[in-house]
Structures are given as structure tokens and as C-alpha cells.
Image (cartoon, rainbow, N blue to C red; front, side, top):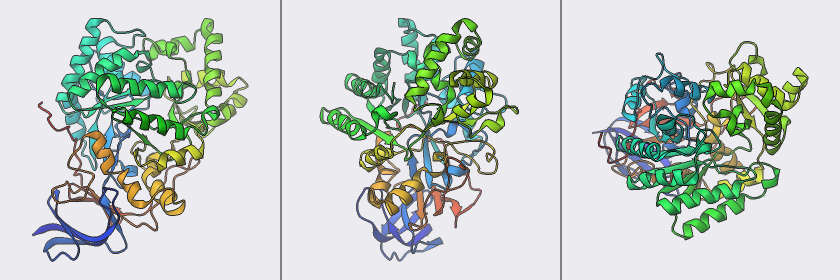
Length: 534
């Protein structure tokens, strides 16, 4: 007898092929049989009439490691239909950690708004981290990457220089060990120190290790604004020199000087693939980005870590130079009116969430750069921001490309527990926004193509061979949604609203959502790359 029979749904299997009416029977955590009008016995039946059944969505670019220790259910991700999230993106992450370097990494992650568990960082490698988050109880699967930032910090701290031969060897050994333990690859965040301190040859050397282990190299590239095409060229060069699979994270064109260049970006990637380089990309469907406000601080000011950054921001001798470079970065991001504060944790500044940098400058009677410096100092580096600096037409152009996967760049949140905090709506709405706004309403791409970009395409990019497709033997990570009501309800002004339309969500054959209600089941687990030996 089968555990579940899903009956009469419109099946979109993840391949990109046309939908068809079918039943699906599950045997434990696997798909047992697929076909119309199945005559099988099952312990439970889910009626799929009027619903679309597809593989559970794979968020190839998530940041729920930032919030997982606070919200292991990742509710905002569940209601999007996500069953697996790739974490450790943009070069950020919780491992590896050198002995004695726990507090340094914790301070660094704090400025990127990571929540730490009670007791702080107590592990030193991927295996220890996996054990710790498994103990939290997971509703979705987590597929971690190793972040280049903690990898570099474990070998050489926050030094603003190339590694010595011994330090590079240490990074390569740590990376190899982490990949053996089951990490799916390595990510870089080349706008964030210490990643921004790395030269291309360092990244090529690490990507060669990644290639030897059949893993993925993902990159928040060195520039998404005025240096965009050069930065894309660097990612292509790393793939060419190393042989590694390359994934360009959250593909976009920032700043009015780049508006309309979405097509050029796609053509550049297509040309690289024509030259035999295995390179892909992902995207979230919004015209604003979000990151730490410290992203507008020049890289040299971050050298040595958070304490050194705060000391430099307080140094009168550096004030003119800092303000000049911050003002230039604000201008590249379309000005102070286009930067909205989303995260202030102190009582004195909490009400500033949702206000622009221009508003702060007016409130404090100072320049935008001075307002940024003051706020970052008062919040000890931990300030989030949304940057309104993309063109909707580029969002549409990139979204329509069948080889660009969907990724949220967001984290798991709870609308009641996090309701007082500012955030980007992508954490709540990415996948339903594609299916509702861009597929159903705008008809930018067909339903089957959109689901392929959320399922089998990211599974293949990651190297995961048993998810992202509906066929016998595949893991039963499945979502049933109403195609007429699926959509996002979160906005920039009012982001803490769950998406609509997801009726049932199964992870490993167990329901985490049933009739749109959380079941309390915790079937998620830390996924490890095939071939893990430790």
C-alpha cells in the first residue's frame, strides 16, 4: 500500500514539458508511480482537482542560514512552495571556523544580520554545523555551500592583501575537506570584504578544487553597476581557467547607466556557454536589491574586521575621504532617496526602519554620507537596506530566459515574530510572484517554463540528481498550488505577509502544509553532496 495518493492534479513535472492530468502515488519519501487514473491503495488521498502538482521549489540562492536559529520552520519559505534551500550564498556562512576565531566570525556575521544560536558558534567545520542545525528541527531541506569569507578568515583573518603561499594552501585544504564532508560548492561575495580583497588568481585556484570535487562555484560578482560587464567577464574567466560549474548569483544591472543591458548580460553568458564554459545564473523578480548598509562603505575601511571598521568611521582624519567614497557609492545606487533602511536593532533607531537615507540626512541635518556613518556607528555595523536601482524591463528580460533559475536571495521569516522589522518582500513572495504576476497576469513566460526554472534547472546546476522532477524513484518533495490564486502579497512598504495559493507541501513524502495550514511536521534535513565521505 502506498503512503499517499495525489489524485486528479494538473501535473507539471519540472522538465519544462507541457502539463497533463495525472495521479501520483508515494511510497514513503519517494515517488512510487505516476500516471492517469491510478488504481492503487493508499493510506491517505489528497484531491488535486483544480490544483497544479509540481516538484517542490528549490531556492538556489537563499539566506535562511541568517534566520534559521530563530525560525527553523522558515514559514515565509514554506508558503512559497519551497522544499529545498541552498544556503551559504554571497560568500557568507558559518563554516569553516578556525579554533580561536569563533568570536571574529560571529562579529563579522552580525553586520550581515545573522542570528547565532544560544551559546554562539561552537563548531569548526561543515559536519559540526550540520549537526547543530539538524538539532533545531527543520521543515525544509537545506543544501549548504561554504562561504569564501569564513574560508578566507579561517586562513588569514580580515587581511586586505593576497594570501601567502601557505595561506592559499590552507584555504585549498580547508575547502577540499569541507567538500568531502558534503558541502555543495563554494560561494563568493566579491563586493563584501574580505571577498573583495581576493584577486582573480586566488579564486581560480579555489575553483579548481571545486571542479575536482564536482561541486558548484557561485558568485555575487565584483560589481553589478558600473563594472558589471568586467565582473561578468571575471566569472567567465574563472570558469574557463578552472573547469568548474559557475553560477552568477541574482543576475541584475544596477544603476541607470546600466538600464536596458539585461539582454547584453544574457548574450554574454550564452556566448560563454558556446565556448564550452558551464555557466548559469539565477534571479529574483524585483526591481530593488537588499543587503547590509555597510555595502556603501569602501572596502579598505573594513580591513581588520568590525572593530577596525567602526574605529575608522569614528576617525576625524578619515572623515573627508570616507564621505567622498560613500557619496560616490550612493550616487551609483541612484541616490539617497533610493536607499531605504530595513534593519535597526537599537531602541533609539528602531523607528527609522522604512525611512530613506535622504530622510535621515534631513532629520539629522547632515549629508547622506554623514547619516550613513552615524547610523552604522550607532548600530555597530548591523543595518540592512533596500536599494531601488534596477529597471523593470531588465527584470522581465532576464526572467524570460529559460536558463536563468529563480532564487529568492531572501531568508525565512515569520510575519508575527518579525512584523516590526523592515525587510525585502522577496523573503515572502519570490516564487508565487513569478507564478502569479509574471506567468498568470503578465504572461512573460509559460507555467511549465517557470516551474522548470524553479525545480529541475536548479537541481541540475547544484548537482542534485534525485530532486526537482516528478518520476518514480525521485524524492517526494512536492507542492500543490491553485494557479488562479497563487501570488505574492508582500510589498516594500508592508513586507510581512505570507504568499497565497500553496495548498499542500510535502517534504520527503511528509506534509508540512496541508490545506494551507502548517502541520508541525519537521521532515527537512541537511542535504549532502553525493560522494560525501565524512
